[in-house]
Each structure stands twice: as structure tokens, then as C-alpha cells.
Amino acid sequence: MKAITVVPGKAGSAQLADFDEPPEGDGPVLVETMAVGVCGTDLEIFAGEYGWAPPGHERLVLGHESIGRVAEAPDGSGLTKGDFVVGIVRRPDPVPCYSCAAGEWDFCRNGQYTEHGIKSLDGFMRERYRALPDALVKLDSELGALGVLLEPTSVVAKAWEQAERTGNRAQWRPERAVVTGAGPIGLLAALIGVQKGLEVHVIDQVTEGLKPDLVAALGAHYHTGPIASACDSPDVVMECTGVGALVFDAIEHVGSGGVVCLTGVSPTGRNLEVDAGLVNRDLVLQNEGIVGSVNANRRHYEAAGEALAQADSGWLAKLITRRVPMEQFAEALERRADDVKVVIEIGGGN
Ligand code: BGC
Image 1: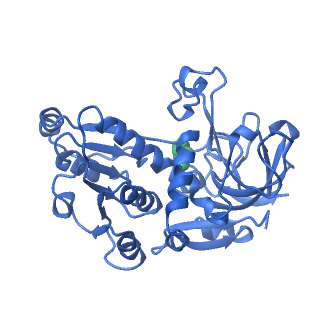
Image 2: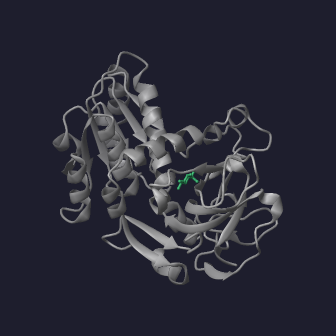
Image 3: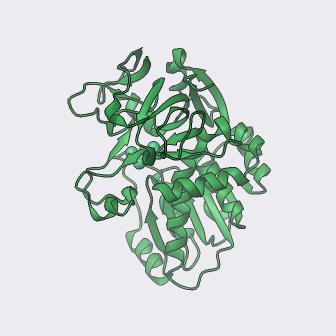
């Protein structure tokens, strides 16, 4: 079968080539991959800046945002041929630490977790893979191929959960949220914010085109410029860019008792001058909470499935701005100005 692989740490090493069939030892469920989304993490791996191959291997199969269909599943697995499934990205560490032992691998304490397509486990940009039933999430068949959005939605479902848990340290009645960044993560964060009944303000740089339209279609408000000019004292800021200046803008302008949730993974080595005294004063005098959030466990995938099921499928479909056949995968790994979510069509399970 064909797979898209890279040599982690080596820019320009990506290739589409023949790859071994998935070994039976990977699990009894055989999944045919339909499509895989591309995100910033994939681009970093592609550029040789992130990623680890499985032990003893030179190459890593890319891809962690998948949708596929079950081709074979054992009786009693809860899965049957034809089911739409998404592979859970992170797997618990082998020790396991107390978080992984409790199913909260997203909070792995010892760093020995693995991630499909990212860290020491092959990903989903291949025609078929095998998995254990509990490493898969079954999707509402009405969502169908749009289920490729489940993994990024799981990441924001977790971020919202973390923001709410932080806010609920005390009496908390959030009304207004700011989302920084109108990429897939920002737009999905805005979707969930609107579903929660919040007044949502999304900030990005572009002044026209699909992003402002998608925000407006949610009933949210689109802005360019700083947080203070978009919304006065938001209760929550979902930071979805990883841009240092925006992180500190969020900390400075979140409302009293508010929460800043950071989801963007930034490159290192960028310096910024900040008034450390002011940041500390704000945090203390206003009981602000800052929480970082990465990855997702099963309950976040389930919450994400509910969010997608409630969303307008026409709106979700518009998030996918390019579909690229597997043979032309290199085009999917180019950033284009009007991209929101780019998906590589693997073609299985159709
Ligand atoms: C993935 C997460 C993963 C993180 C760090 C993100 O792109 O969506 O599942 O934990 O990268 O590797």
C-alpha cells in the first residue's frame, strides 16, 4: 500500500511510496483511510523541525487528523464494517503514569506517551491501518467524511473544558469570549463558544474573504486589531495562534476573574519585551487564570463529536478549503493565503 512518510528532523524528506501492510499486532480492527487533515504540526514535521519515527525505524508515516471506515472488526468490538472512525492521536505511556492509567493521556506526566503521525507511532497518511478498538472513536454516520474535523475539534473541546474548569474556581458566569486566530482551531473554538451561548469575538489579520464570512455565519463578531478594541474585558480568551504578542495582549486585557487558555504551539527563540511587573500585578489583582492545553482524551473526542453533530454541516464543509489527492501531497503541505483546512484524500473506504 502507499503511505506518505518523512525522515523526522530532515527537511525535504517527505515521499509517497510503498509501505508495509499494517501488522496484525497493531490491533484487530482494520481501517481504510478516507482522508487526513494537515495542520501546523504536520508542516513543522515536514520542515524537519519536529517529530520522531517509531523506534528502530528511519521513517514516520505522517498524519494525525484522520477519517476512515472500518474494513474488518472482531465481534464484540462495538465496531462493524463500514463504520466511520477516527484514530485517537495520543496513546498512553507504557508505565503508565497516573494520568495515563486514568485515561487522561493528554495529561501524561512522564512524557513517554506516543502520538500517531507525530511521536514514535506511524500516522494515518496511508491507505490502511490497524488499531485496537479502544484507540478508535466511532462517528455519527451523518457526519461522514466531515469527521476529518473531529481531531482538531477534540483539541478545542479540551481547551474549553480546561477554561471552564479554571473559571469555575469561583462563582463564574461567562458572557463574552475572544478567540485569537481564525484558522481551523480558532474557528472551531468559536463554534463551541457560540454553542455555549457566549458572545464570541474572533480576531485575525485578514480583512475580507472566507474567514470573516465564516465567523459571521456563526453569529460571532470578526475583528482585526488588538483585543481591547474587539471586546471589553472578555471572560475567556482562547488564544489559538501561539503569537507571543497576542498571548500577552490576552493576559493584559482578559476581564477580572477571567481565563486565558493557550493552545498555540509557538516556535522557540523569539524574544519580546514585556512589563513583567504589570503582567504579575494583573494576574494577582484580578484572580486571572492562565491555562495551557494540548491534545485530547476520549471524553474530549466525544464532546467534539457532539459539537460537530450540532453544527451546520454546510458551515463545517466550508472549513475544508482544499482537497488534494494523495499523489499530489506536496501541494497540501504548502501554505496558501486562503487556506483554512487542507485535506489529503487517501481514497479508502469510499
Ligand atoms: C495535535 C495534538 C498533539 C500536538 C503535539 C497537535 O497538532 O493535534 O494531538 O498532542 O500536536 O504533538
